[in-house]
Length: 67
Length: 246
Image 1 (cartoon, rainbow over the protein chains, first blue to last red):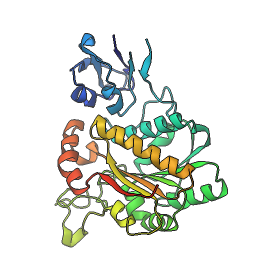
Image 2: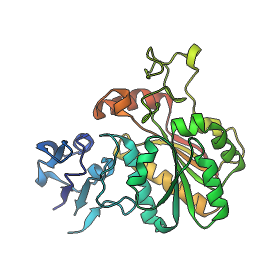
Image 3: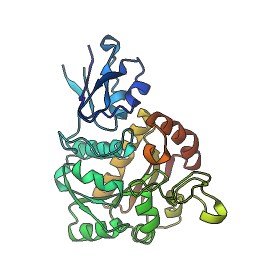
Image 4: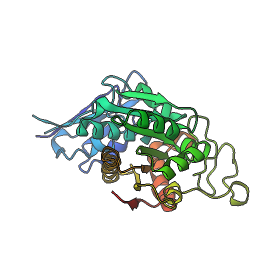
């Protein structure tokens, strides 16, 4: 099953991955990283299809995708 | 389980970029890194950076770079490329650098058909210096030096650099892209790869103009800045290949 990993320290909470995920796998979380950003989290891991759109749109290279 | 999308070796592994949340500068730097890694030429690449937010890139990327005096990146790149023809030399400039202060150097380098690649970031405003009016600012768009918005009679009209350079005989490849969707981001990646390949093949001057956002100086959050980019910026700056002699 495809899997998304978020590097929480690189995330700046812009929300692009949440907007462009076709399966609403991602969401902005409620925990903050050391810079104070509420980093994105994988809310519905079972829905991931491994399309990489989140990784492509992420400005800060905070997302890695496995399949 | 195989990694199908990894952080590129073109950016440093543990550095967080200095750009604001949602800024597409970081996206373009990531794409350049991916292309260089794919073409296996990271070791022989030299980036020539303009002044402004472009300078934040030097902490973030993992290969050689030099920062030029404001606007003179194309002239510096010319020198590096001519004295070291085996290197891949590209400039990374914003609109204030490429289209305003460096207009003479940029147009001259294009007119000579210098064998360099230019990545031109057009976000319609001066970013790091504090949101001043850029040559690419849209009519009616507010800037710190145009608090009532850009007025044609007072500030002139937005400049379209791809179309301006298309008047010249020498340039090889001119394309305007954006990073507003994953699809367009992949098109930008392809355009950057083509620009670099043109240089390796000795075909001359290539430029990729990437229409991006500046959430901070536009005064919008990242997602609203995407809407502004889609509705306003891309209407003024339509995407597409302007010239392809490659």
